[in-house]
Image (cartoon, one colour):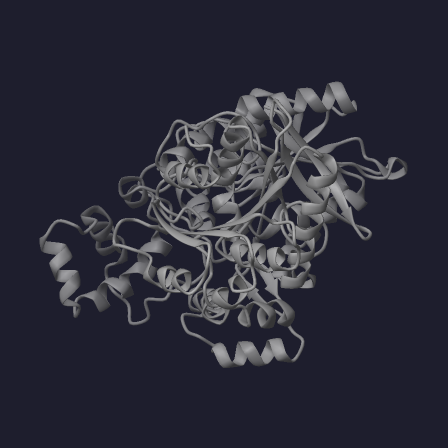
Amino acid sequence: MRGILSEPDPAISRGACVLLLSPGIKGRVGPHRLYLKIAARLIPLGFHVLRFDYSGLGDSEGYVDERMLVDVYNTIHAGRYVDDTICAMDWMQQEVGVSRFIGSGLCGGSISALLAAKADSRIECLLGIGLPTVLEGGPENWAKALTHHQAAALRGRYVRKLLDPKAWTRLVSGRTNYEALWKVVKKALPVPAAPKPAPGPSKPADTDRTNPHFASAFWSMLSTGRPMLLIFSGADRLRYQFAENFESHHAARLEPFQHLYEVHVIEKANHVLSSAAWVDELGDVAGRWLSSRYPAN
Amino acid sequence: MLEDYRYFTIGDERLFACLHRTERPASRAVIVCHPLGEEKLWAHRVLVNFSRDMAAAGIAVARFDFRGEGDSDRSFDQSDFETRVQDTDEMVTAVRALSPSVSDVTLLGLRFGASVAATAAIRRDDIARLILWDPVVDGAAYMQGVLRLNLMAQMALHQRVIEGREALVARLSAGQTVNIEGYELGEQLYRQVSSFRLAETLAQFAGDTLLVKIDQGESAVGTELQSIASGLCRCNVAVAREEPFWKEIKIFYQRANALTSITQQALGTSS
């Protein structure tokens, strides 16, 4: 595996390393160099930052057997890169002498950090950015994980399609995602006048739709007293998926652990935090949270 | 694998690069110019595997990140077309210095990277060959497509376009930036790329050129590229059946075998 380690000034080092784990297949740089921007915020605070490419991705060696991207994503959600993450921590411990880690990353990097934390207690806390709670993509998985907010947003689109002959052709030719259509209708009825989704208390999902690996890793973090800061983008479905598919569904069980996990929502932000203001907010929130947990020497 | 990851310096800034070395001293080298922004990320693994295949075939390859992208220094908004051409020039010089056995240098570019490669090539007299994968033919049209990404982002955020193309260009002219998928596009890059015309640039190049049209079999021949090649000496066109791996597509594209094969043929190393 190949990566880049950025080290803080030894005089201010907090002796802990933030692992910025690869989001999906985009490697150690992240979309629009997001990981460099995050690293630039955390290194002056005294944190080591390690960005590396998983096996078969980026500049690393190896090969990914899956042909379809969605299958790659789902194997990531199932822990594909847990061993690589542990390997990176071993390297840090042996070569740099740092053995305290903060698992972090965007989306797939975030779930990799959570799953690695279950397997390795050297990950002391989780800085999750857009932590996915359900399996990724594919018409079947997508429809299964459809949240109330997504259904509300889609309802207007489906209503407009009633007037589109092409949509009717798709419907009768079997190319429509019937499960998604049914869920939209089922979840969204009765239809209010304004279909635009509004932020507010999330409704629990009918059944637990989370990635089967997610909950046990999440409980593992909480039951071992390891804190989590979960940063979500306001315009990202992942925010609602976490709230509806996990948080609301397990509200009672989560209650005793409220002090261990925080959720911060960057309003209006998209999944990859493409605006500089959103990245600044991420940097501010993450920097404060980490600094409070790792006092300066 | 003989791969040397390192930073090169240009002024007081760093260029991140990977040199794919060959087992025996290579007489030929390929320097790869990557596409712009997110296209670079999606295409990355194809370029890595291509470089490894070429090195295994005895051709040294240098991949590098333009300043403002990847792991190189400088913020994106402070980089432009000219800095990318300078970076490419620097890499050619560095490869020649590090590999004295190399006598034949090819510049290879994908999409926007092809524009950079072509422009860098005409400013030197030691580039033997240009291999341009799905090159940008008309920089102005390309930049309109780039601006369209901002419009799409506005639609996603506001359900409507608040600033149209003209307003975005006006913003650039006023010295502000336009956000393109998280990259802050500056006026210099916009203007410089907009003035790029592949045919005009290639007309100034004395070496061999291979233009490779990438498509999925929908069009018979790259007619636009054929038109350019017909007006030039030592310029050929090939068609590679590949998916547009520089975009987010359903397939995880790790190798572009048709492109690699065509490129190896052009370099005389096909197996």
